[in-house]
Image (cartoon, rainbow over all chains, first blue to last red; front, side, top):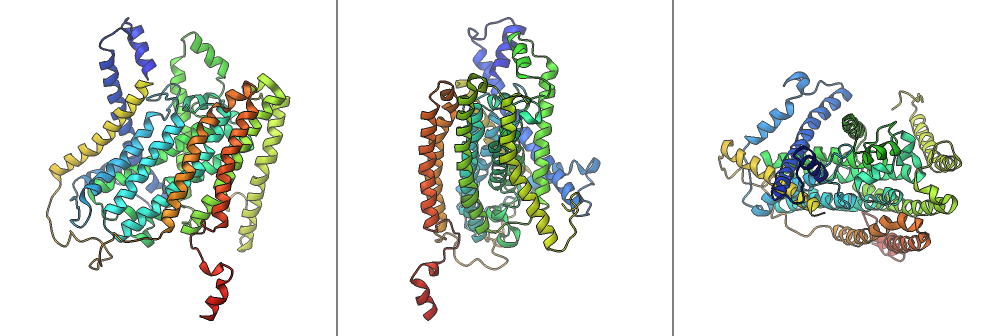
Length: 424
Length: 139
């Protein structure tokens, strides 16, 4: 964003940003504007998702869902927000009042701070921080702090159990997520989200998801880990209504409750955007090659449509993933707490470790075999592309086939007819 | 670089301001009718028995300890992973690979240790220990 501002100051106003006394002030205003705009974006996305999710849930359960406020009920979230705003704010005198009040700040900060680095398109992000992915991992941990505080400060047994369960879950799944994020980092050689995207390509076979079996398996591990970190079904144990009333936010009411709600829905964007960046090629537009882009940049002539198209591509991928998460929520039952722990520590963590080592070995081998040519991604029709494809087919397709075989067996085991297109 | 981290500060201010502004706005419009019944902690409609600040399952402490150790290891691995590609093209890839193997190896040994000690089981069954079974059955 700073580059943008510098460009505007230099080209439109004809001034040198380095020597200009007011530059710092302009930067400050721009920073606050970006902060407010993106926090608002997060809140709006969370609100719209809450409506969209209820509509999808209703559709999947043959109900109607919210459809009265505005066209198709799209303004329902505003009505909800207004209702929560005018609700009485209850803080029990038995609770730890200051910690109770502090918890929503941590939760919202952990959510809003991720937008500092999340990309929205080519050059479209608040900053292009060089420690981007590491930064995302660290600030999302603030949410756990807030959840733990809210659970403890409520002085309610339900809230306490919900809070420590949430902490145990989120904290456990941070290990496989942190390890598996090393796979795209190893392949791209950067933590900067934009660099990771630029190391991939526009077409699906250029994405890290389909490049190597490590990307393929890493995608699923990261997806599961982020589902669990966002407390989404099937990992919504901390707020399992049937066991824990409402979990850590049992004692919260009105606007304070709304912040927990907002963060949970808003995290859908954060997790989908991180997945899109790491494995789905981010904002890369199919047909615009890296050389093309480099040429435009060298001439300072990146066309305006490229910004828009890349943003559209990124948002489309992110929204698609967010919809998959919603789909999962209304399809799967909740896992048990011991299943949740064993899935993390006995399956995902060892698998993530193996993936990191494999990714490192693959990087090294492709250098040993192809030398400097390994610096760029393998062209589709070449010896290297062929090896990549064979490697992928062996390491990635076999588990997929096994998975589908297992699924079909399970379906026929309970006596249903297997119809590959409609059994889902 | 400074710009990037100043941006983090700006976002933190925006996030805190967002929460605070809405709560202040709400304070102007929302009702306030204190009532001893509303002040009670929710416990399924009953009067709460005691406080909720009591000892809880020690498994959570073990999870927290394991997390701290693993997370520190992961945080230390990230710089190695970051420079790995660069080193590979400088023909020092084997050194970097060895480093990654050492890091992951330490983590893996820790995981195996936890697994063998059955600290990964959520419900740790003491009666599975050799020697305990007979004592349990005679009870």
